[in-house]
Length: 111
View 1 (cartoon, rainbow, N blue to C red):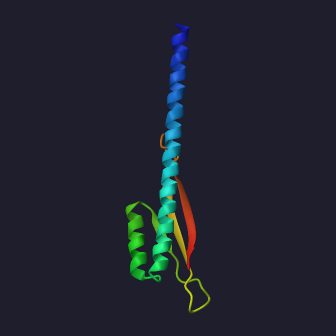
View 2: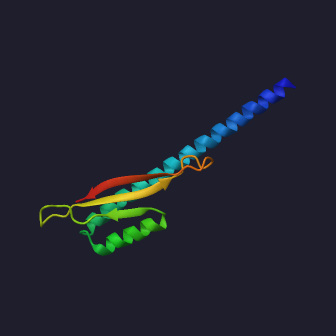
View 3: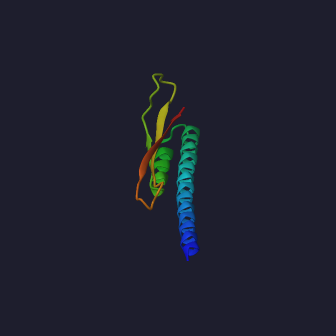
């Protein structure tokens, strides 16, 4: 009888470990997806020559994912050069069981 309870405890601990690892993997995938989108957005903004239409499209696309893409005005002190700060704000839930959410930022520059 004692062996049954010990086995049940081991099984419960294994299940908890699997759930925690699954949540961590999910959070890592969310972070990777946000990083990839941020890099793609910077690339497309640069390739378009800082077109207002492309910036608006990328911001709308980010909203569809539940993120916020913030593109600053020209930061360059030179008239012939464009430098813009591109920030992606996103949230992750590392442990949905606990209900914690973390807001994170990815910052980059389009030149």
